Length: 576
Image (cartoon, rainbow, N blue to C red; front, side, top):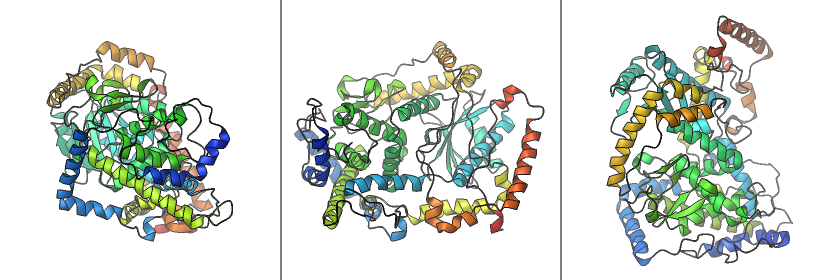
């Protein structure tokens, strides 16, 4: 397979699949020149994007929006910091002295994407602390609602979470009163589950409790009796099975948005589910991927990342076009669809793959700002790749490049590195506390079981959500959203999925390099048990496992957490 792809501006992109392997391979040698030429074009006329050019009115609106953005001096000052040249310790993912040789700079970018993902990958200790926070919240809620069920959805469920990602939790309780949020918020505060008094957001389409976990300082959002989180996570995991490397690309773009402060939907930013569907649509609609000429698995993720930023930063007409990832992916006209958000006119619109009446990007009010950042990222990557090609072009057939390309668009701030180090120091200081939650893997409750037990509560919560969404859709210029999921449909869904064994998906990498990059080769001595300590731990685990299983029914075992020693979540006694 080629290491690069031809320019997206090629008019013959949808011609017959007669392009020979040799011609595609030759293109990879001139990928930098091709991309540099694209950087001079404001609007592409590519057949890859059958969207038409921006009209004069639309271009005027884009210019007006950018002028308004420039008028905010404070925002400009805050965000200019994210484009600065990073310090050396803020680019910790780069592997020094690896000796790997690259055929071109875009191949180097491919492997750097892998390095970034491995660095952002949570260690076993970080996984353990997330499980710790989840189980503490579950125990707190069950102390007052013994029949409650707690399920994690969002990025933790799909395995696409960043070190600073929130924990999105849905709690199923037999209580439909509006006061249930305040009751549980008071409970979380009383039992010191939250660092400060939790905030209850009652007026949102989906009412939630927001707080920081007391020990780990993870941000937590808790909703109640909502089934959409599980259904969305299920559809995302199906797409991840279909596109194995999709997760790595999503992680990189999510960190890009996080770094530039554009990832919070409550302030008009772009959420993780929206990023996921945009990247999925990019894969689905890419002409070379569609015709089988290119497979996103052959040293070409770097080129695909550049093309992603080019598509959404330069070419995509978000004024008129909406995205659907169902039926293999397609572009649709905004005005022809009832589910699209018409106000504000500048929103990108993406159809929910599990709910055709829902626009998952309706909160992304800063689409114009985000896409301008994508444009800047595209231009910076093109310049960086081109400069490395010129710098190393005199070497032999293959070049050794240890410089970073991605540091031109983001870096890892020191406060994030310190936050992750603090979690590992916390593990050393809270040995007894951590040992009570020593597994880094948990099993979610069976969704079919939840639907059968909390059917009326789920229906009631859906009805309230749709009533609020209807009012919001009328204000945004969309048509009335219909409540399509009846009790019968939920029962059919539960029956269909009754034999499914759900799991929280693993992060899309083999292992984290954070400890190695932070502590060097000595981290094994810091976070490892001696042989004597391992024997003591093994005997203690065997005793606990035997006592916990005594007198327990098979029905209870289905919802218990797995017990297992994590590989690197060890060695706190040396710090004492």
